[in-house]
Amino acid sequence: MAKKKEPPMLPIDSLYNEISTLIEKSKQKAISQAKSAVTLLFWQVGTRINKEILHQKRADYGKQIVSTLSVKLSEKYGRNFELRNLRRMLQFAEQFPDKKIVSTLSTQLSWSHFIELLPLQTSDAKLFYAQEAVNQGFGIRELRKHIEQKNYERTQIANTKLTKNSKIPLNTFKDPYILDFFDLKTAYLEKDVEDAILRDLESFILELGKGFTFVERQKRMIIDGEDFHLDLLFYHRKLKRLVAIELKLGKFKADYQGQMKLYLKWLNRYERQSDENEPIGLILCAGDSREQIELLEMDKDGIMVAEYWTDLPPKKELEEKVHALLIEARERIESRKLLSDT
Image (cartoon, rainbow, N blue to C red; front, side, top):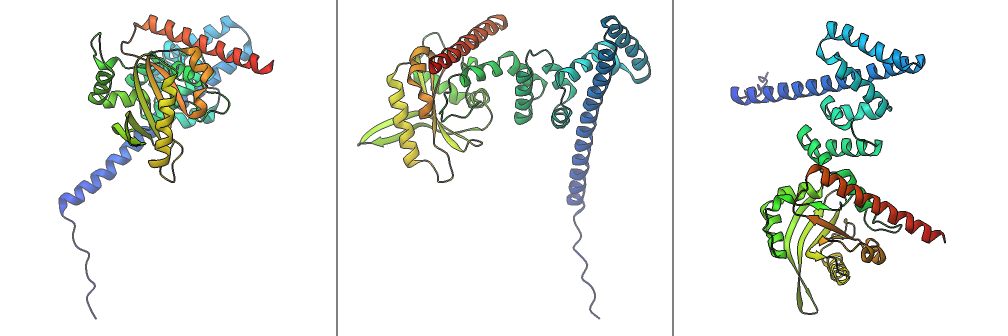
């Protein structure tokens, strides 16, 4: 009877590396599950205390019970249940009432992420930043930076420019874009902005948002025997479409629309793949011409116009400027509705 052939022995280093990988993956999974369990526990604690306070309908009772519970719990279970953190649990349960949403987010976000979200004023803003943190794998520092730079508000300003038959999906662009990493001098040319983007392409893509991939600079197009050059060409993986970007130094001018429309038509005919959606365009201007942009309704042709700022204003000034832009944008939407109703 023929002897059964033994499987070849794995070299000890290879076997060690394989087992190490299994252990590390298991440890990471265990840590992630533990963090998720802690977050859910804090939500459950907050929910239960909120119910008790609501049942009693007495503000003084609420303060008393939270304070007393904090002393007892922290004595037995440690600093996580000190008064400040216990109050955060109450806020957390109140601001995120849907357990399914909390369960889903807690698998990707830590308790520290949720602490950063609690001061935000609206549920939409909280969920926007939570989803952004999940999608882009933000740590606490990155999440804090995006909140400070008003990513949600700037995305909403861009969304207000989209009309009923827009070819641009919601949350694709922002307005304005903050390009403070350029380190440009007071006087600069369009080429300087383009060069600065390519020098720090990673920062520019982070500001654009998740899904953007750089394709080409100065994309050459030959139309009627004449050369045309698109400043920057990107591809958006999630949207499955090319994104053309043009950089302008001054305020928006109406003839920029025709130029971008031509580029998009050419890209659609000669560069778009069979499984891709129609290309869209972003015209970045140093200044805005809001009435012209509103009247032209360029989003129906897949074109967005946005400002870019090469200097990041101080925090309070940034908040005021973005808030004013958002109010103005919302007022334009209301005016548009009133006109359509008459």
